[in-house]
Length: 285
Image (cartoon, rainbow, N blue to C red):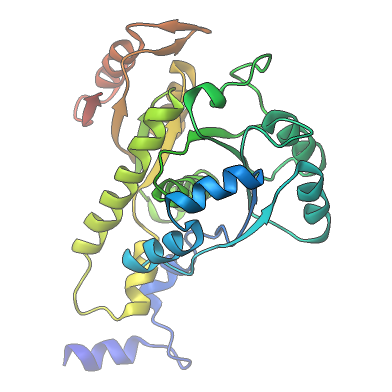
């Protein structure tokens, strides 16, 4: 009888109205990635493991939607030419590109395509900070460190998607938000892949076993979003905007507050959040 009633709920074209809201979630998907790296950097990443095959395997292993395609460029000028002829959802650049550094390249990209996300992926913390570039440089959306693990690419892709989808998805379906406060590119690069893998696994574990594969993928769109902040003020801004949807907060102890590195910023931040929302789960890292 339950099956019959469910079948009656289907529209003439077989569309199940129970899943309408899930079709509207995750409207922005990263489908095309431009990866800009010198031949040496590309070789190192492929030596660590085949990047393309790993990201495809990770998508399939976690039963996620179609993985993005990666287009490679070896110089900044070649990358800018490619951008003129093809649309991309995300640009990932290494710090050293020969004729210009990653920040200068990011600046050129932002001049032409202001809304295109640009991520800097470095081999070390030292390379993640280029002399003369301020920490608040708007030409780079985020900085990560390659830790010989291509799982970071999945985390980068999902974090970009979460940042662009969170406002719509929280409004339409009250999707929950996990806030990670960490200013270190290295620790952020280590934590995000673990967080995303666990969130996906936990979400899959609570899905109804009776769902078919299509409906499971649709419901996966309602998994908690993960947003990152690198300063006290940025964390407060995110918390204030999405307060009713915040699921939990994970925070480092030391990060910038009022423009300077503060040894107690994490303690102060979580104390403020506890005052505003006493039952919110908080974790000091």
